[in-house]
Amino acid sequence: MSLFKPAETTSAFLKMGFMGFAGSGKTYTASSTAVGLIRHMRELNLPAADKPLFFLDTEKGSDWVARKIKDADVELYTAKTRAFADLLAAVEEAERSASVLLVDSVTHFWVELCATYAKKQKRNRLYFEDWAYLKGEWRKFTDAFVNSHLHIILCGRAGYEYDYFENDAGKKELEKVDIKMKAEGEMATSPTSSS
Image (cartoon, rainbow, N blue to C red; front, side):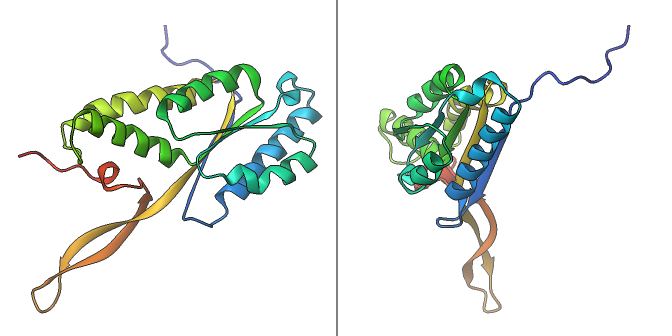
């Protein structure tokens, strides 16, 4: 018996992410995508097409696009929070009651998870050994995101990665080396080893 079988579509739910700097148009693009997806679902007479768009909002971006969404004849429900526990609950509730879930910005939920964990540890920074726990907790969201029977669109903040280089005079200088998902707050970016 073969391990492989002919391919077939077993899931048709959009999982999309936008990464960019503040003001780059993530919220506008994500909400336009959500509205377009809902219109497409309506054209196909899909049952979820008549459910509202859920917007999990950490930055009040829903305030800026609410009129555009309503003008497109899409019902909009919002929750304004940065609590990681609310992110997990939002995926579950949206799967039952929404056509699309838009999360803006997912970065804030990661920052809140890291900050809450550090506070419980009575520390102001994270260490290498903290990552196993944090990644395990975060996986609860990523598993729900990937496996949900729901269209989900995420927005995330971009930031720069920095590294030290030695200049011609032998002095160390800090330079931008890459772009990464921004974790606002030092705790969430790069924990140091406790050794």
